[in-house]
Length: 302
Image 1 (tube, rainbow, N blue to C red):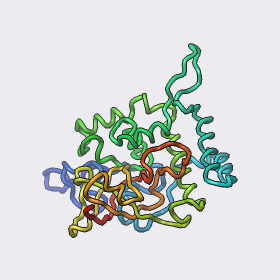
Image 2: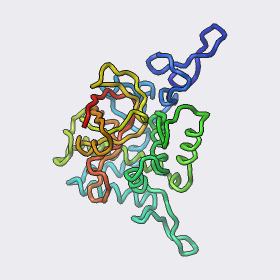
Image 3: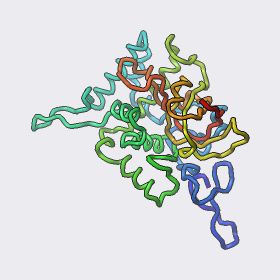
Image 4: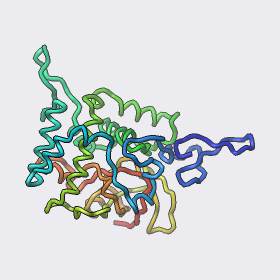
């Protein structure tokens, strides 16, 4: 089954595991071919993970987020430009989660400020190295909200009962970055990103009504990706990590690998890109954080 449960074949032998398409899965294949039974976006992981969903995407909403922060989105609707919208968003999160630019919280009784986990610190860490502790928290958030398992964190993750899964789990729940309602911060970041793209700013890199945009990813090999189909050398269907980076620029993508993957990424699977917080000094201009799953990609050499 797609969630990792097994179906008996009635023969008394080993039970079979099947993916979302009903295909038999080798027990050693990535656990990412399975999915959580429930998520928080209203579309089952077994559907959300498919290439068919990418071809006909549905609106995704993280349950309760916009309703609980209606005042934020009302204020955003009044913003005259993208810079003002970013300011409104960041002020709201700073006030709601007691965030400061140095990632500290309010001053304690001893006069010292304590570190508080921040969505900005996670984004900064991801852009430095997506396989660090900050990256594990972000992948854990995708797992929690979208129901998709990671395929890779420092190394391929194939089974629950493995050192790779244990190390990932240890990092994604470590209190240094997994505190201060960090998943709720990321919920708001995702919803803000979706609002921003639908707002129709003149400087937006996609039309307000766009369903998908072409993005590029550079790889040296396919170690991080499980190949579902490879009809020829120029195309493939890959199960991407549950959160991964793409670029709007093919040349920038080429800095990360000799093989360039081009995919049409549904707008509803975009979590973050630099334009939505234009004044924050992020590295990785043109980098998009994208929810993974199965993607049809064209493959070319740099």
